[in-house]
Image (tube, rainbow over all chains, first blue to last red; front, side, top):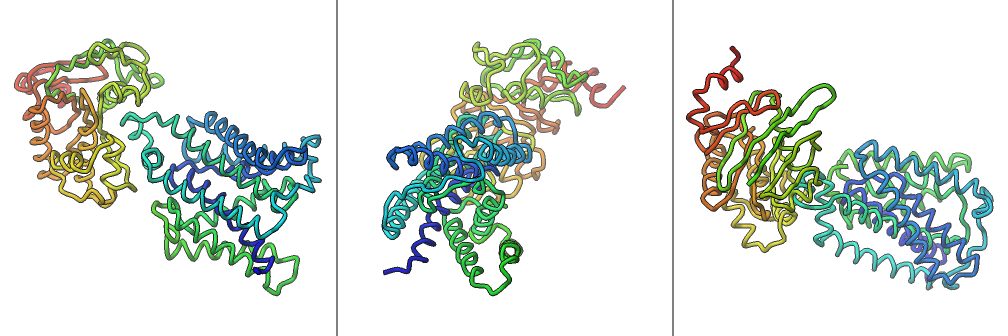
Length: 283
Length: 227
């Protein structure tokens, strides 16, 4: 039997794979650098936690986590539809601070900084839960592969390369950007739900910038617009983060040492491979 | 085919287009010329919906397309290229063409052959030279189902060989029934291929006529060279 530590790690790896791939769909394949991506993971986690703690079946909660995240993603995309580049990024970054403020202050719903403990397991056995999450992530990878190679996926990539040219070729770029954001945030919400049922606890720290920085590093190290890159980048950073746990340093500097190590990896990769390990477009 | 009636556009206090009216006849090559800042590209952007006019109207085959979004104008039948080429750099030639029209490899190869671009469909667009990127952009615009082709300075930044190819391409397109409206600074190119020339200065139509008449017109010469 696989050691429980590895079961936990693989479960998290599969969850992060969904998060980073859905992030790559927006950033790498469509050029929408949504810095608030982790907000939608957090929303999915909170929705699933609140609903299952209220007695709802996990599968309804899982679906609603995705749908509510997608609804918020659509709202954000609609509001920011005229913003491009840095302006879009700044607004999406601002969404993180809104999420932190809401999750800390809407105490009657989220219990504020105390968080929500006791989120029920979807499957009691850790091994079978890992297998379940693994199947979900593999299905997502397959769906993702099909989507980015479909006509719609090509239009996403055309928008990334030149939105004006895409529009004058008869494509409604507004619709496609909204649709893209709906898909990306739907899967972010699903990943958030899976995460909440894995750790059985959720609090506002899920919205912290540190969480976002980790998925950003995974994406950039693997490379934009590459499924293989996302898988390798996520796995590599996972291995490094875990290996750093065994580093013999004073507990109070473990956090900074980890951050510095990730930064060094990022710099080394970008120096030798400016597009990341398997990137198909510039970072 | 296309008619503009009294189109105006102000940017702050500057009148970029000032009551501009003209027509483009079916199956002709019409060139829009004028000194820098005359408002040519603004007129093109208004025609293709990228810039909203402050006044006036634009009709394509009697259908009012004023203020329609760019994708709807494209769907109405206007296909355009840009002064600075706008290709999908990270995508293959095939994918660039697929965005324009969902079709098979054979038709795509024909579209490339039509613009004398002899490259594999799997070539990444950013690997093409600037002149080839221009040809790809024209191939993409031509491949789209269209009624009117709008080309913004197609010869800018290309070598004499490609420039000559463009002349041949435009003549072939006209022969095949296409209607072309283009902005061009290369007067020899314009005079050689145009059926009609429209001269724009300060956002207004100064003259229009046959190339041989335009090239001798005193007002046109003054607009270009100064008094």
